[in-house]
Length: 287
Image (tube, rainbow, N blue to C red; front, side, top):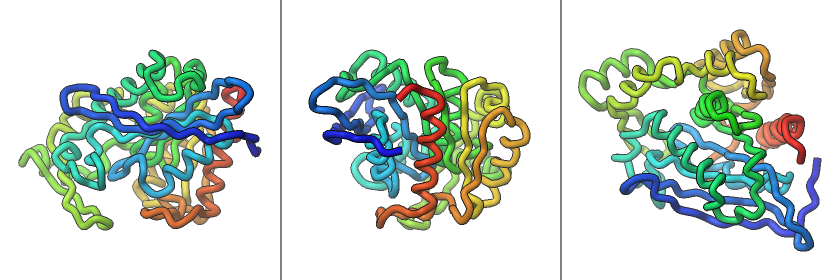
């Protein structure tokens, strides 16, 4: 469904959640020049080794804004990106799911307190959340616990917060740190023991499958059939145990729906994910 708009507004923000813990983000919304219409707010979360300006994120955020949403994208405070990817590897190494959940809550609090740019166009009572990969898992966790979320969407979302396997977990807990490759940037990305310690301390809360299964918040899981076995097997567990939600597979879609970084243009698979998300959300809020 197309959305007639007058002007696409785009403003950036920075918020210091704690000492030297920054959340940097963007708000995009299409406004009519003759009226002030508040838009449902769509939080759009990046995943592991992701950031708000990665690949398809700016394009998809603008697409959702043109469809009638006020779109908020932001870098998690410990995603390792300040100005370029990845120029804060020390913070990347200290990332945990709890810190990411705190970041989401902090942004939502800023929304509720009207401290975000373009707040006069943001309908804080119509809050939606969409996440890609680890962001999809974070979307499910947050939506299951936060009463203000009206609907959640996972794009190729994780079903298990431990992305790394048991052998890597044991090595990191023993040595205090481990490293994973970033094939694109050729960097060794640190993972500190606190990541796994945090998961061990919040086993029930960060059980994505159980959270989805117990949630009455409308959710849809959109999954590419060419994604990794780890992600696809998690999708099947979610579909088996949280069957009250919606599940759609996109044929030919890989983990990033065929999009790359730097962004070189949209793909049929990405467009399908956007359309399916919009159709689902329109059934959850009054646009």
